[in-house]
Image 1: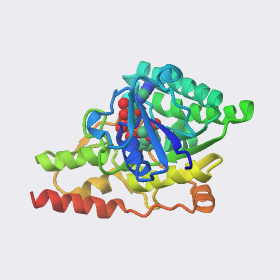
Image 2: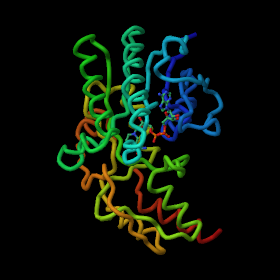
Image 3: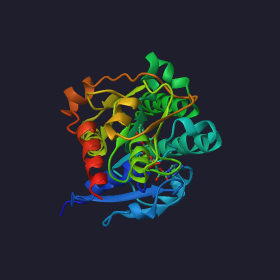
Image 4: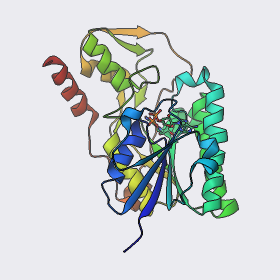
Length: 291
Ligand SMILES: NC(=O)c1ccc[n+]([C@@H]2O[C@H](COP(=O)([O-])OP(=O)(O)OC[C@H]3O[C@@H](n4cnc5c(N)ncnc54)[C@H](O)[C@@H]3O)[C@@H](O)[C@H]2O)c1
């Protein structure tokens, strides 16, 4: 009998990680583990068939006793504007934690798929320094790349563009689509950070998960952009939801434009986003109206 492929997902109890695990466990040839410290993740996101290890990535060597064939590294602090308040957490998770994960992969000889952030491409490349989060994610892509150069580590770096879909967070760590859904559901005005004309590329989590799995199988090196082809302003999205809009003051870290290069994902992975944010929001609104 062929032995199973051991896959570790850091951040497996989070939004993207739990959707990834849901797909990975469908393949009976996979044995799937999650390492999560539950800082934003939740046990409600656990998927049957996976093994959950509780703890911080900085302790990965002590906590993970298996030898993975592949690591998806998603377990980092993951919010842009809030990262100014939480810089200590950003440092612990995204610098100390990621260093430990890289050392683990180097020692075990495992390929790593890194969940990079598209924030570094925002505003013509200025995005990388616009918040503690963006900088930590951007500098980590350099560190992953250098582990490839220094130690021959196998890696693929993906870049996510505003992910939405099932299990998206709506709490203080929430992201815009779920926050708008909850505001619309409760009849509150939709709160749009000024100027509202800032554009984003919204990508369904199913598309992201498909891209991650392909990057795990065939990706090698940097530059796998995973984003949809349409771009919308935050005001456009709020208008799709309908209802009242309340403008909030501008916030630090809020990039104005997105920028995407899909060539490696398209040409090497055969990937393109299949789902549309417009259709998703219209369905959410019709569900809200019928409740
Ligand atoms: N959601 C997006 O739009 C988006 C966009 C670009 C990049 N990303 C990246 O994708 C990854 C997943 O994001 P998400 O939206 O699912 O966020 P999330 O907050 O839902 O998931 C992150 C998970 O990692 C865990 N975690 C955080 N720090 C950890 C640590 N030090 N040790 C162990 N576990 C830790 C959290 O508890 C959580 O379960 C992150 O690396 C994020 O930077 C997300």
